[in-house]
Length: 335
Image (cartoon, rainbow, N blue to C red; front, side):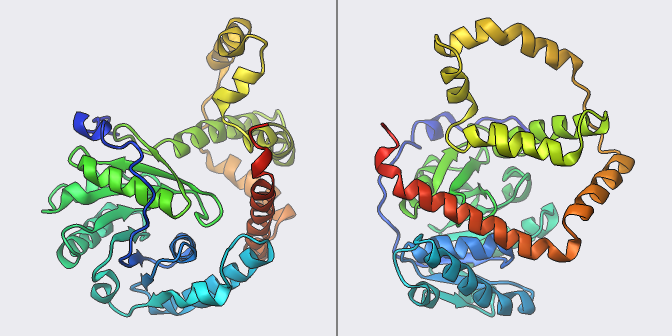
C-alpha cells in the first residue's frame, strides 16, 4: 500500500469547476457489467460513446445487454430520453484505435492485473489525444502501479465506480503523485456533468475509500459468522433491515450526529468506551477456506448459482425503484 499524497497544488485545484458537458466522445474499454453501465451513464447524458473489447463475443453482447438495461430504466422513469435514442449514441468499435480516437475521456474496465493495465495504458497514452483524460475503473490498484513510465502520466487517474455506476452514482477519483491538478479538476467536473457523485481521495491508498469501509464491515460480519454468533441470513437482515435503512439516507458521521442530543461530541462522550472495548475484542477474519465453504453452502441453499444473473437483475430493478423514489422526493429532502 502507498500513502503518498497528491501534490499540494492538486488539492487546491479540485474544487467544483462547473458542470459543462464535454462534446467529444467517451471511450469505454472493456464491456463487462461495469463497462456497459458506464456506457449508459455517458450516453444518457447525451454524449457519444465508443465501446471496445478484445473479446469479440463480449463486444457483440454489449449493446443488447445495454438495451435491456435501458428498457428497465425507462420503466422506472429514470431516463429523460427514449431507450432507442440513448442506444443510438453508443457505437461498438472493432479496434482500440477507433474507440479512443478524439476521446474526451477513456474509461478502462479491464481485468485487475497490473501487467495488463500497464500494457493497456501504454497503448492509450500512444493512441489518444494529448489532452484526453485516462481513467481506470480499478477497485484496488493505485494509478502509480501502472502509469509511472508513461509520457502522459499526468492525465492518468483512477475513477473507481460502484457496481453498477448507472444506478449507484458514487465515483472515487484518486490520482498518482504525478497526476496533475488540472486532470482531477476536469475529471470531477465531467463526472458531475453526467450526473455522478465524484469524491476526491486525498492521496493514494489501496482500496480507496469505499472498499476500505466495506472491507471493515465485511471483515466483522465474516468474523461474527465464523464464531457462530449468527447465521448468514440473520447477519444480512441486520444490515438490510437495520443499518442499511439509515445508511441509504446518510453516512456514518451524519448518523451519529443525529443519534445523540448533542451531536457527534455527545455521541462520542456516551459511546467511546463501548466502541474502544469492541475494538479490543474484535477477531480479524482470515478468510479460512472452511468458513467460506460453509457460507457458500448457506448461500447456495438460498440462491442456486444458476439464478445469480436473474437475482442481479432483481437487485438492479430494486435500486431503480429506490432511485425513482429519491427523485420523486427530491423536493422534500431538505425539509
